[in-house]
Length: 129
Image 1 (cartoon, rainbow, N blue to C red):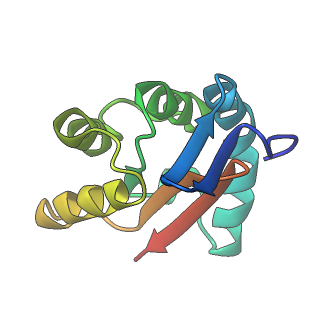
Image 2: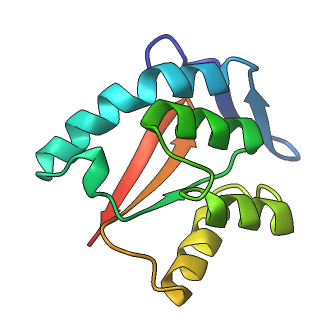
């Protein structure tokens, strides 16, 4: 996302990883995600409305709400992400795997878009069909 290199960082220190996360992250997600994702989905001949389910890495409740607003989703679309966040908290990268496992067990409709956000505030996406 534009001008966001310092809004989410991971640094390796002497005692493990040191993460910084600015208060701007939800606003950046909300303002930048839709444009990028619409173009990315078009490359796969899909529109937002074609997505059957969403596996959104829950960096926190504000991130999930920002994704919902950006993409016009409801809390029903992110219910599994919210449930995993409530039960386990943010487990970093592994969190999305817990979400995907639960969605697989529930036979969530395809295609599924899995989204996560990483250092430099980049978006990472996977299309599961």
